Structure formats: C-alpha cells, structure tokens
Length: 204
Length: 204
Image (tube, rainbow over all chains, first blue to last red; front, side, top):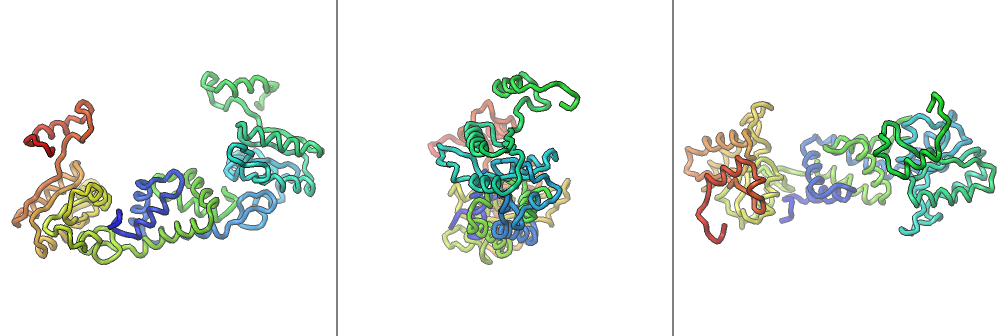
C-alpha cells in the first residue's frame, strides 16, 4: 500500500508539498482540512489556482500582474505618467501602493542583476524600460530596488542607461525605520542616515 | 483598484488564505510562486485538490480515508482481522502504519468525546464499532486515543461498551519516549512509566 491508504489523498499531498515552505506534514494537514470542508471550498480553491495561472496577464507597459493588457495602475488616468518607480517584483508594487504615497507608474523588472546566479541585464525587463524612455514622457525615475550588492549593481546599470536622457534619477531614502531604536539599528543603515540627514522641519 | 491589481490573483490569494495556518502574506507568496511555475503545475495542484475532495470515500468498515468502498488496509488479506486499533483520526492511522509494528485493522472514530465542545458518543463513529463487534470476529481492541481527559473519557466509554463481549481491551503503552532524558520528562508520564514498569529483557 502507499503511505496514505488513498491515491487521491497522496496525489493532493504531493502537489501541495511542492509549494515553497510547505513540507509533507503541513501538506497532509491542509489536505485533511480540505476534506473536512464542503466540496464548494475545494472547488473554489482548485479553480481559482487553475484560472489565475491560465488567465493572468502581465501589463504590456509595466510588467505588473494584470487581468487585461494594461494593468489597473497603468490604465488609471489619474496616475502621474511622468514618474516611474522601478521595482524588483510585484510584491514591491503592492508594498508601495499600500503606503498611498506614490501616484506615478511602475516598471517591474521581474528580478535584479545577479552575476553569481547568472542573471544579467538581458534576463530581466530592462530592454523594455529603454523603449518606455523613448516613447513615454518620463521626468523622473525612482529606483526602489533592494539595498544589496545586486540591487546596487542594478541601480547603477539603470543609472548609466538613463544618463544620456534628460531624466532625473532618484533612489528611495534609506535610514532608521520609524519607531526603531537607534541602538538596534545596523551600523550601515545608521551611518547612511547620518550622511543623508535632512533639514529638520515639521513634516519629517 | 483592489489590493492586488488583478482580480484573478486576489481570488487565488483569498482562497489560499482560508487554509489553516496560511495568512494573506503567505498566500500571496504561494500565489506568486504558482504564477512563476508553468501552467501544468497549477493545473495539477488545482485538479488534485478538486478530485480528492469530490472522489474520496471513507472505508465502510473502518472509516479510514479510501479510494474505494473498503480501504487498502481492510481489504488486505494479510492483515489480522481479529485485532482492531481504535484511533481518533486518519493521521493516527498514518503514524501507526509508519511504525510497521501493527498488523491488525483500524477503527477511525473521527473525533473523541468532548462534552465542553458538545461532542458526544453519537457524534463520533462509535455506533458502527458496536456493529463491527457483533458481525466480525474480534479478539482484541487496542485503544490508541490521546492521553487527555477527553481521550480517557472516550477510552472508558468504549471499555464499558465492549465489556459485555469476550474481547480483550488494551491500551497503548505510555512512558518515557525513547531517547528522552528523564529530567525533561513531565511528572505524570514519568510517574506512569514507574507504575507500569515491565520485566527487563533484551527486547525492551
């Protein structure tokens, strides 16, 4: 006999355990939970996964996840088309959107330059950025990539790429997080926050 | 716009986050992972969940999860039909099967008596146990329920139920786990392990 006395259960556990962070034990717990719920729950869960994967599109403009050719951000006439924020992946778009502090458009690279893992500029969505620079009226490009060696490499690559054009290139501010104690902040962040100190006013 | 710029993604995240132990952030991580994999992966995952829930059966004899009317354990002629091990749910069957130390059949209660949560003897699979006692040739019933007040209550209820019949009722041994240090074993377990001490021989 197989481990689970049911090939149907075994197959579901095996598929669930292929998801990241889900081992065989968790997969079994999830499968038994699904079995205890009514069939509608399993149908909704299964179909939403299948439908999402088969029908989802990537925005032709910014490469964000989308239900149509242009994502809801790019097709929103209220957004500022002249400012583009460059991010690594869609999770960063969600994080920035949650702040409600950015009203421009995005450009989702889908990765960052990482020579060790063999990811070069051609493996991420950079060529399309050049097309956007040529065809759209962009005043400012905000770099919002991770503060890692790879992020800095990608930042520099894009900065060089953009420099021939009359476009302002900025980077999101790095510093001590609001609410964080200075003594628990890492030295690099604390050091940078001193170098990049700002004039004190009521809004900071 | 909704949180995720895609209703398809939002729907999949919402369904995934209904699973136990999976919050919105984990659900999003899983959904983005599914999007990065090819469509075959999403199809297999989705369909295995739907198929499992709609086609799975419960063994007519022992209530174990099964692909057919009788589970693979009950339909295996090599198993000892005269010994029945009573467990709370299918995970206990899997745990005992893994030890390869039990060759009898099971009886899955699907719960234990818990007056506080309003679960009585009629809410779990006990009536069918009486039918089995009357129709099958059972020599021994092994109680393998949790060592909790509820487990003990259920044990006692089954013991009383079985006592009119000529059937040996045993309980799995409780004691210090193999490899555990005595000083870290809880007092109740250590106390019971002294009361239920066994003659020393090579096999223990």
